[in-house]
Image (tube, rainbow, N blue to C red; front, side, top):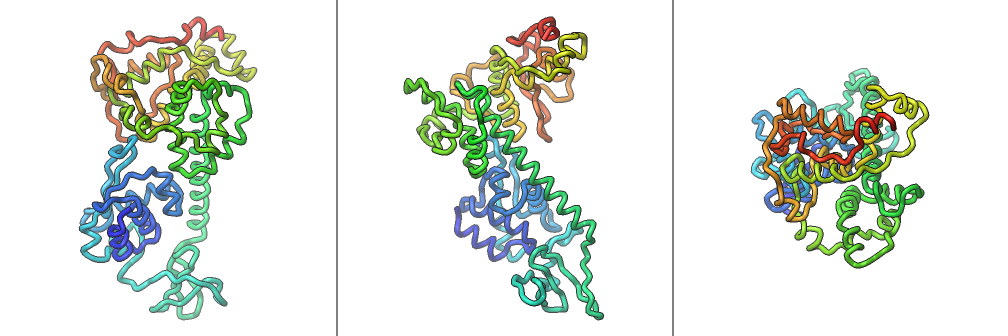
Amino acid sequence: MSIAVMNTVWENGPDDRTEFMVLLALADWSDDKGNSWPGIEALAKKSRCSVRTAQITLNRLKDHGETGSGLIKIFPGAGPSGVNKYQINLALLKAGPVGGFSDDRGGADSAGGVQPLRGGGADDGLQSAPGGVQMTDSSLHPIHQEPSGTIKNPQSARERARGDEISDEDDRADRKAVKRAFQRLVDGWPHFAGLSLESAERAFGKLSAEDRDAALRMRDPWLALLRKNGKDHTPAPSTYLRERLWEAVPQQQSEGDHVVAPPFGKAWTCHLLRLLATAPIEPPAPPAFIQKLIAAGGVAGHRAARERLATYGWPRVNDMLQRAADGKGMNLSPQEAQDLPEMHAVAVDAPTFHQWRSAFDERGWPWMKLPRGVTFVWFPVDGPTTAQSAGPSEAKAQSG
């Protein structure tokens, strides 16, 4: 944390409350040059807003003002584990208060003399401000008082209702993201198949976003440490979370003994193919109608069998793909990161790329979720025909 950067934001930050809170949260993490790399969930929590609102606000801060210089710069995937790096524009802030937007996207108008007033009283949270303008403490939308004494709010009831609806959607999306992260944590947990995970899920939900990420990232190094120390008993996921057992991994083991492979790079793709060359986990019994569909065979039955294999067969691959979709790489040993075949970059619209995707689909392998902006993926030059497969043959998949 840099006190100097925080003071600069306090003194000259934007008038818009959400922009100010997000910029202040970045300053709380930043070094003296204004650089920081928080995860988006952690940033949203510290800024007291939803993940979607934080993402929108970051883009607004990036494009702030007529000059286009922006209050921040965003460097996608340039931080640790592939998170974004953010740099606060200290030169712009130190030049003086940046005020509000001068374009048509909204925000506070620094020239209008409107200031949010807090407090309550006989007016149910409304207080007068200079110039006959009033402002509510809850929404911070300016409310203009007409000469007749009536109050006119420029934001319609339909817009406010839509805003509440979007907020609810954001909350549901956040909960789903936490649930997916928990599922990746417990998938393949040693000696725990079929047992209840309710207490573990509650413990996971109580963690901060940073702790959830650490618990997920350090799971495999922690399991490796248990095996190294000769432990034949693996604590339950709930114990791992409540007692913060991931913190037992030595710092040098968690950082010095691993190399972070960026998503969709050479080492990342090779590790993905190595995992897919292992035998898949047997999927759980399908619903009755899916079981009949698979037993009937044919194109539909084969497709259903492959989809179930892709969903359940390689949980560590699904974890790896989800992390890549979130912009996070994989921790590999130095040997895994160096012992690579000849690779080449394949554009996502190239015929070779579609050949790889068809090969994944035919073998029941889960396919990549490419984030926006990814234009190529590294693959072995030998092509998909040489990739090893431990999945079932087409005839076996059709028979269920």
